[in-house]
Image 1 (cartoon, rainbow, N blue to C red):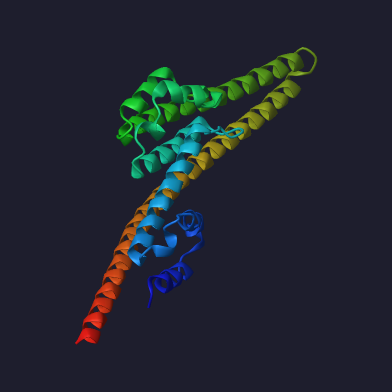
Image 2 (image 1 turned 45 degrees about the vertical axis):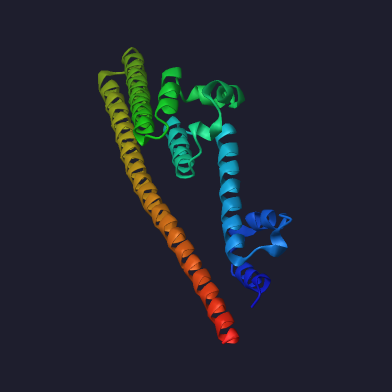
Length: 253
């Protein structure tokens, strides 16, 4: 079997995720003369370069979605940084801080302070840098949620008191008491509703954290499987090469 036939069979077995890399390999003027081993190496090289290019584009054009929480933005950025580390793209896509800051969208200023940026660039190879920033963002979000909750509750109490005072000037005492009890019941129901919503949100947050952990574990397994598949492919190539050599020797004998 010729190298061209081996490569053809190999291409037929590839999944669609290799299509872009395959197109780039075929542009090489030496493609018709590639051995199977050379073809596999070139294919992997192009796939890696395409992934780096896509990560670089995603990094520079990172956008904050409408109504997206700060903590979610930082988590997306953290995932992006992890991939950048995995593909060994040095210093955030091979550009220095000043050049990068000029090309980034203004959305970044809504997320990171200057001190945070310094830490990210200084410790790009260390996930702890982003972990610290994520923790600070989560704390800011929790404080803001508590503040908004208190403002809502205080506003409802004031409104209830104002209504009670107004009623006391024009209605009998027994009617005033009944109105006050009714307002208090409404207030308690609102507090219970807010408490339930908060509990539901905490549960949702914990569920999302667990899903993120599961996805990270699955990604780790997939990376390991890709490595093992590559080893299997290389092993098959070596066996094919050895069989061809044995066949040539047998012909000569």
